[in-house]
Image 1: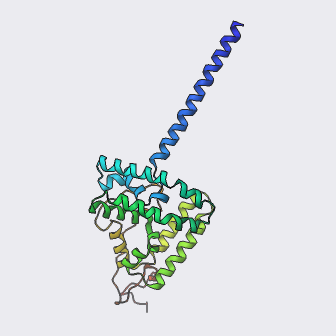
Image 2 (image 1 turned 60 degrees about the vertical axis):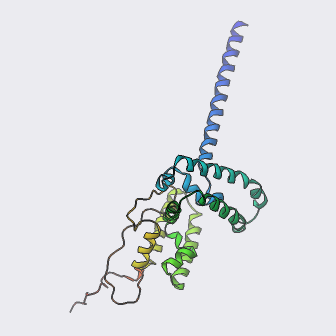
Image 3 (image 1 turned 180 degrees about the horizontal axis):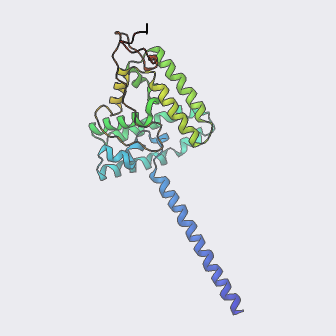
Length: 248
């Protein structure tokens, strides 16, 4: 009987340890999830409170704490809205969430200086990569033609379709492939403007998260224009540089 009691006590102790370890593991997962803000609900603020973004913006510990508290508050407030739209198609969900996201960003921007707001916008464009060309504001600043805008839209649609298939490695390949295709639609001048929008033109080093769409863009090719007509990078073919003459 004594042996059985010792065995039972030992087994109970081991079981208790396992339960405690599982509980600690769950708490750790919850803690990690709490630290990762969801841009679906708070937009650009998710970048402002991550380590790289906060460092680039030069946030004080006090401002970062206020932003983190705002993010937590907004993510808790969106629960009821999520329940209301959970059965809607994705496009309708995004439309319903848009006003909430905009309000989240507005509240967060009020806590930042003008310089910090500018840097946050630069970081947003860089992390989106060439997918940012689909945004009307970016397209207007770059002066994209109607033809360029349509090609951008088609490329983004194809990319989104392909991104829905395959594993993470395939998605990374797809991102890089379409990043190159979209860059090729721009003239050198437009690419330079995009680099300024993303903070690259100022010679700054902006942190890019591992989970972002884009990577640092390569320097633009330098070439002399043949005439005043804007040429996209896709127009250039080997051997068509100014001054190249056909062989006799």
